[in-house]
Amino acid sequence: MALYDKYVLITGADGPAGFQLAEAFAAEGARLALTTRDVGHAMALEPHIAHWLIPPLILPCDLHYEEDIIRTVHRTLRRFGRIDSIIHAASATVPSVPLMDHPVDPWRSALAVHVTAPFLLSREAMPWMIRQKSGSVIHLIDQAPEGPLRAARAAIIELTRQLAAEVRGTGVLVNCLDQDGRGGGGRMDGVVVEAALWLASRESGDRSGQCIRAPELVRSRMTPRPS
Image (cartoon, rainbow, N blue to C red):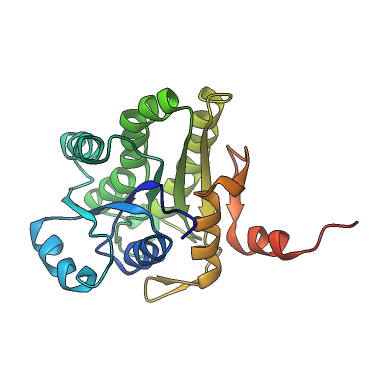
């Protein structure tokens, strides 16, 4: 129960990766706010969380829209009074075609979900984190060989660095967690889950503004330090 006193907002909880993270954080005692794409997805999620000891707050939120994101952050704050961590695990599905042949709507959707949404979540939540002098924002990313997801990956890495620089010294940490291709069918390798739990905990120290490969992080933590 390493996160029993933490309040965590996880996006994309109706997807395999987001739900896997939610299960892991719930098992560690965190109080959770979970976003789903719409009310239908929220209702479909409810049977899967009925056995959890601490019921989460489920918030339908279309990450393509600024007003939905603002409403989600402030509903979470009204319920919990604080947000200790935000984990952006939502993802967009786009056709696997070269950019020269790519339709514009999936391009817009990919950038909205993978870049604009984490920017808006940070913009709304980080002032509260600064006031409480602690907080962790984690952007989950993965390999993208081509197309808008590759462009979004580069953009979110740079956004992470800029946000981290702006809040340096406030106690708020911002990082990208690179799954390093450790996913299948949308689910994540346990190494990625372990790395996310660690970054959201007090153990992560002051690491910020980095793109962290999950396997390397877990390996470095397991390597004994020289005496």
